[in-house]
Image (cartoon, rainbow, N blue to C red; front, side, top):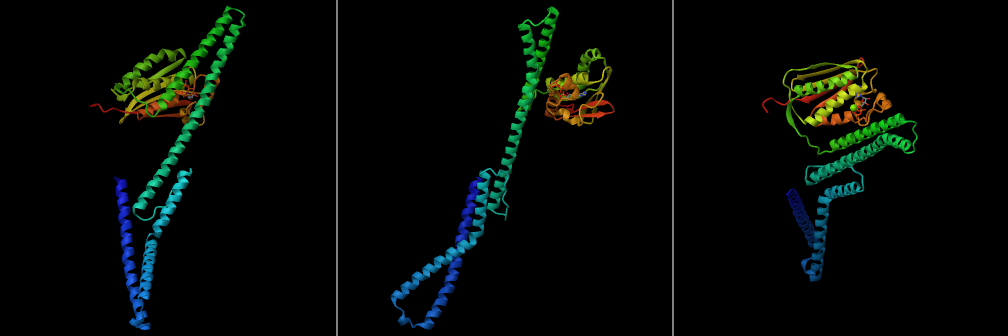
Length: 364
Ligand SMILES: Nc1ncnc2c1ncn2[C@@H]1O[C@H](COP(=O)(O)OP(=O)(O)OP(=O)(O)O)[C@@H](O)[C@H]1O
Ligand SMILES: [Mg+2]
C-alpha cells in the first residue's frame, strides 16, 4: 500500500515536472519566435521568403523547442538525479558489506523517506551482524570452556579405570578408594552436563516459565528449614529473619528454587567455617527482597559483579574444583526472566547476595 502511494507520488511529480518544462518551453519559444519574426521582417521582405526557407525555419524551430524542453527538464530534475545517484552508490556499498553506512537525508519528500528507510535498514543490518558475531564468539568460548571442564573429570575417570583394569592396586581398600573417586568424578561430570544443559536451555530466547502464585515467605521458610541440617553439618549456623507476612509472587517455582538453592549451596561451599549465615527476607514497597550473606576470608574477585558471568570461578572454587561457575549466571538469567534483579556485594568480610522480585498484587 505504502509502495503504491510512493509510486503514485513519484509519477505525479514527474508529470508535474514535464508540464512545467512544457510551459516554460512554450514561453521561451513565444519570445524566441517574436524575436525571430522582428529580426527577419526588418532584414527581408515577405516576398523574398521561399517555401523551402519557411520549412527549414520550422524544422529549426522544432529542434530548438525540443532542445529547450530537454534542457529545462534536466535542469529541474538534475538535483534529484544527483541525489538518486548518491543513494544508489551508497546502497551498492551497503550491499558490498559496508553495513551501517548512511545517506545524508535532504528535504522532506518521498526520496527523504526512501533514504530514511535505507539508513534504518543499514543500521539494523549492522546491529544484527554485530549481534550474530557476538553470539558466534560466545558459542566458541562456551565450547572451549565446556570441553576443558568436561575433559578434567573424564581424564581422571579414565586414569583410575586404567589403574583398575591393569590391576595397579595393592589391596581391596585401594580398589575401593579408586572406585569412590571414579564415582565422585562421574557425578561431577553429570552435574556439569546438567548445568550446561540448563544454561543453554535458559539462554534460548523462547524459554517459557511455568508461572504460579505462591507465598514466597512460606516457600523460603520451608527451603531454609530443609537446609539447616546441611548447613550445620558444615558448622554453619543460620541467622534467619523471614517475614511472617504473606508475600505473594508469581514465579516458576522449580526455577526460582534453583536460584535459592544455588545461593545456599554457594554459602556452604565458599564461606569461612565455622561461621554464621544470615538470611533475611522482607517486602519493600512492591518488591520482595531476599538477602543471603556469608563470611569470607577475602572477596572472590576484584569485581564481585563478575561472579554472574558464566564460567567465572573464584580462586577457592578453582583450586577445589568445586563448581562449573555456571550457578550464578543461570540464577541471573532466571531472576531476570521473572523481571527481578540479583546483585552481589562484598563488605567487611561478608559476601552479600540480594535478589529482588516484583510482588504480585493481592487481588490477582
Ligand atoms: N556465597 C559466596 N561466597 C563467596 N564466594 C562466592 C559465593 N557465591 C559464589 N561465589 C564465587 O562466585 C563464583 C561463581 O559462583 P557460581 O555459583 O556461579 O559457580 P560455582 O558455584 O563455582 O559453580 P556451580 O556452577 O556449581 O554453581 C564461585 O566460584 C565463587 O568463587
Ligand atoms: Mg554455585
